[in-house]
Image (tube, rainbow, N blue to C red; front, top):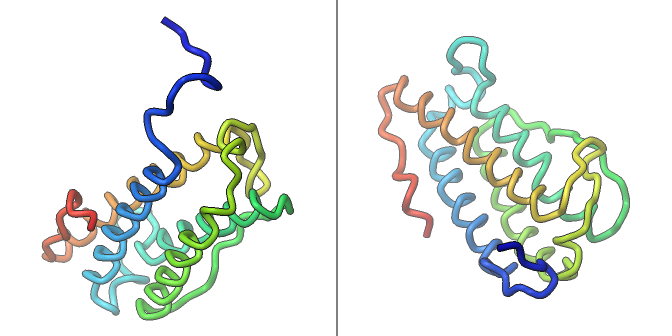
Length: 161
């Protein structure tokens, strides 16, 4: 049975989506913390990027996408630069706070609108947000593999607080 998405009650509210996303960010932060400083930007398997590079990709998408949606000013995908775990963790924490500050500025109707963000991704805003969360989960999985290859037990993925 099809329903009209403008009339139906949502399965998840915007605040619940933010909470879900921030839970993933807390787990990813713990993965970053678990990496030895010397391995974050040097260790990889096969031809995959380092977890440091993957973290910078995530930072290139989260806050810039929200700012673009709110300000309605196009942004290009541009990963930040960092060379140390300390720098990445600092940026991660800054972005986490910025996400919390920006989120209330997203108008409710924007989630159902089709937008192009970061110069290349066109879809409904809710779908774009899920893609950012999915991308983080995917890359965190790579981080888990790296940690295990380094002989380090990764943090539990299901503890999101």
